[in-house]
Structure formats: structure tokens, C-alpha cells
Length: 467
View 1: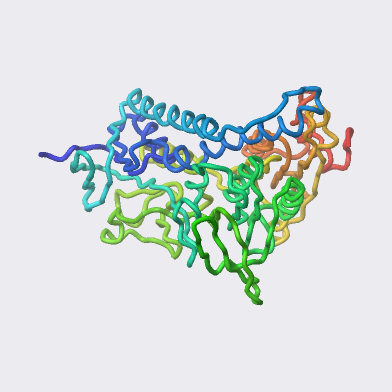
View 2: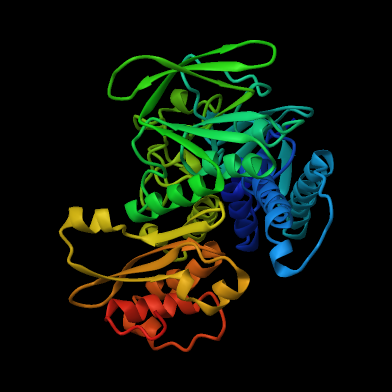
């Protein structure tokens, strides 16, 4: 059988891959997308962003009904958790969205191929699966995403010792859950199961949670989550795990050295990070350059060291975020089409979907100090925001960092209700090089949570009105 020829073959159907495939087809390229999972959307849609947010929302409503409704004059009687139905709602959401991407492929005339791809050189791709075939491509885009980083001596079985994937499928609420890793994934999933009734302890190697975030935000997040019932053991190195039929006992020692201690749990979640997924693609045989972290090295056009092979998303340098991968996929294929798009890596927002949410964009105070940049700070608590007070969610603050000389906004850090939505006003402002005064002089509707952004911008110049 002769090779099937395409202008672009995208390997991986996650956020970076499927978005790139659709955009390439819109630009007139004959495009195929190869995905071995059997469903599109990658880790994000199938076992990451989407199912975790479904459970976060459901568990948040469950907790509100338990603890907040009565104070608002709403009596609901005895509450009962139907975990099976909650999981079913999550699965229905995922299924609908994955099928939606298949529809978009058909709409945009992208060829969807289910199978495992191996690059053979010269633009040839061998696909093995239910129907094995050989593809020929002018250009190949690697967007295979990432996988869970394993922890030595702690073997994941997805039953008692789980990854984020297993934590989304637990058949019952554990009495005691230990989360190894105080990053985004660990805190989000720990929050889900804490709300549903588990006693949650987070163990972290570092002496702080949420590495990389603004230190003040991290400290306040830990304080709030501790008040909600999550226990933290910081500066601890997990060295092993011993399982029985009903429990797991972890062995730990202080990260800086000291006596060994143990911690017992029904379920342990390993959430120490993710690593690029590139195994089995044949990249080593083709001489594709990789860095020490196993990421594909690319130039500003996302081109690897081998002509005709490009890469985006979790397999290259940068934060492992779905929206970062999406933008990279679009920018990559638009450049292939001769356009001149751009992506500013300093303006990629990050959101942590605990409650309250945490959202950040740009530089942290620590980074500005390290770079020797003089800056002003404008900070306003949500306690001073009318809508937050009316809604009953007043924890947190908005903090704006602006250049001391030019007033240009350098970073925004929010911990509070709907922070992930509020941050986008700031991202857009920063994309256009706005000053804090630009936000301060922009009329904000009342009463809204976004008024806290305006108030923080006013605070940069020391002229707040409502705080």
C-alpha cells in the first residue's frame, strides 16, 4: 500500500496537538492527527484538567450545602454523598468534550488516526494499532504531552498508591489520604477528597507549598487550606512505602537530614510533578536533541534539531499548562504557513483551582528583587470588596506589582473567589503594556469581584477609596 501523504502530521491529540491540527487545516494544510489513547483531548481532558475541575465543583457544592447554606436561610435537611453519581457526572463531561473534538476534526477536515506513532525519518511515520499504516509528512509536530513523575521506592498501583489518574477514580472516600507533593495537582485533588470527608495530610520535600508562586500567596494559601482542615508536613523526604491489604505506611526523613518517621494512610497520592512523554517515538534514533530533563530542544519557531520535526507543549521547555500548549500549537502552524504570530511567555497565567482559587501572571516579588527591579505594590483584601462580602467568600487579596519608574504592570497575584476568571483582565492589560493607572482609571461595574483589581491598582499609587 502506498504511503498516505500529508502537509502536517500531528503526533498527540491533547490541547497542543488537536488545536494545532485544527488551525493547520484552517490554513489549508492537509492534516492528520495520530493519537494512541483512543480518545482526543490528551491528559488534560481525559484524566487531568477537566475531570478534576468537575470533582472540584461538585465537592465544593457539597461542602457549601453542609456548612454555608444554613447561614443563608436555606435548610436542606440531611445530606448524603452519592460518590458513584458524582463520578458519573465527571465521566459524562469528559465523554461529551472528547466527542466534541472529534466533531471539530470532521468539521475542519482533519484526519483522525487512532494508533501509536513511530518516526522513521524522512518524514515517514509508522502507525500501529487496529489498522496499521505508514504516513508521509512534509512536517511533523510532536505534541505527546507528559506523564506522572515516579517517586523512587513508592510504586504506584492506582489502588492504594495512586497517581492523579487513580485519584480521580477512587471507589470510596478514604478515611486518611496522604498527598506527596504540595504543588497544584496535589493541593487540588487533596481539596476534593478533604471536602468529601477524608483526613488529608500533604507531605512536601520543600519548606513551602506551591513552589514558583509568589511567596506571600503561597503562605496565605497554606494558612487558608490549613484552616479548612488540610494538614501539612513540610521539609520531609519520603523514602519508601509499605502496603498491607488495608493501609499504606510511608517512611520519611527530614529533607535536611534527621531521624526516620512513619505516616499511615488508607490511600497515598503521588503528585510530585510530571515529565515529558516522548518514549517510543524514535526520536533518539533520528538524533533529535533533548535536554537534561528529557525535553525536546526547539528554536523560536518550535523546530527541533532535525528538519521537518517540530514540538510544542509539555515535551518542550516551559510550564506544563494546557493553554500554553494550545497557544504554542497555533503559533507553530501559523509560522509554518508564513504568518508572524507571537507568544509572550511572561504573560501566561497560572491558576490553582482550590477554594479560594489562586491565579498569577508575570513576575513575583521574589523574581523582581532577584533581578534588581524597583517596584511598587498595590494590595487589597477581598474583605474590602462588596461582592465578596455579599457572597460570603472574603479570604485572600489582589496584589499588583508595578515598575517604580514607569508604572508598567510587572505581575499580578490573586488569591480569592474566582481568581482564575479575574486574572484575565490583568493578562490583557499586560499584553498591551498597561500601567497600574490604566486599570485604576478604567470604570469597573459595581458590585463585582473585579473591583478589587481596580482598588489594588489604586493602591499602587496609595490612593485607595474603599480599603
